[in-house]
Amino acid sequence: MNRRCRDRSRPAAAESPADGETWAFDLLPGGLRVVLETIPHVRSVSVGVWVGAGSRHEPRELGGVSHVLEHLLFKGTLRRSARRIAEDVDSIGGLLNGYTSKEYTCYYVKVLDIHLEKALDLLSDLVLHPRLDPDDLAKEKRVILEEIKMYEDSPDEVVGDLLAEAVWGDDGLGRPVIGNEEAVSGITPEVVRAYHAERYRQKAVVVALAGNVEVEEGFRLVRRYFGPMPEGGRLSRGRGPTFTGGYRRATKSIEQTHVCLGFRGVSMADPAVYDFHLLAGVLGGGSSSRLFQAVREERGLAYSVYAYACPFSDTGLLGLYAGVSPGNLLEVLSLMGREVREIASGAATPEELQRAKDQVKAAMLLGLENTANRMSRLGRSLLLLDRIISPDELARRVDAVTAESLAGVARQVLDSNLTGLAVVGPEGLPPEDELRAAFAEGGGC
Image (cartoon, rainbow, N blue to C red; front, side):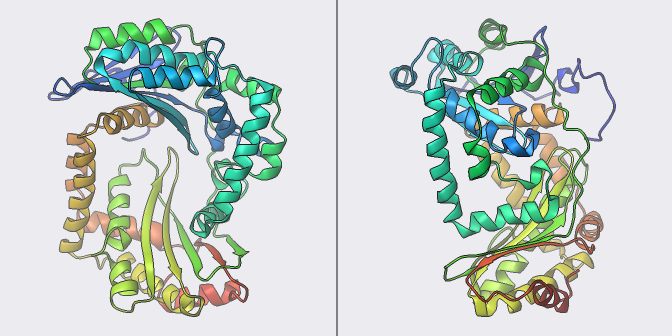
């Protein structure tokens, strides 16, 4: 997983899979990458189109355009109306959907294996030939503006977006995937068409399949339906974001105060990413984790408290979250600071580390029972890392984490003055210096 300089026209994933692996790779002449995993004992196939078009690729004035485009692709193509799309999916008993993230947009379908060609015909039609009608855009913008209001009514969502802004500022990673009212309202049909033409090109796209499909037949069908996609494209983002220890707050008429702390993490491509995930697990990954025990079980100060690891292709974020009564906010921050200090000093026990390992491996192995999860593993890994990380390799790397290596990553991530802080709560929130002092009194950075 070390980041290396290599010829982007021949991805590392094009290498043959290791013994015991069931995935195969194909590269179309225009640069589109295809990865396929054969699972002969199931009757379904999941197909995903992974496009390197996420909120971090957008200029600020067009924030949310990736998400707007995702909505529009389901409103009709040059061959199909929105109703026809729905009827075609239902006629084969399939599941069709899409979503947008900070680094990519994904469109996926799950069908019985006998309907794979129909699914690829439909999915390629959506991605390659969207109608992008101005009337549809006007309607979907209204829908998305309602979606933005829905998010604004969810303080646990708002505080996460505020934390991203606090630590990454004006960089694309610091802006919400859904955009904001001003930017979304200003998106025009011309902007959407230009963005689609720029981003939906072969070198910026991965097609992933997993299920009961033969390799050559799967590759043949992908070449047939996605071969006409425009060549070229790019995944480059330019200079990576600068992590800052900023502060954001929002006042809302709510009963609880929601708080997030953020620390600079490691990227998906960093070998220490496994330590990073386990660090989040030990701190707040389950009911036996340190934060859950200290804040909820021992003192009853919160219902929801946890830690989360967000590795991206070139950076990362470790977040701590709690939803508490306003009067308990400072005490909870102090407890968080104490747990951060102890983990940064290397206090994680062998038992804690083993539980975190078992959690990560169980989540991964249970996910392998679903073709959609297998497809997602392949598509995301190839798009963002340019290689496939097998379940066996992941398990080996998780098992290879030691108490010493975890302590080293904990010091790297947690022992820093650049701590992002975001708070959403009712009137009368303590000032920033008081919040940071409470965290520091507990031993936090």
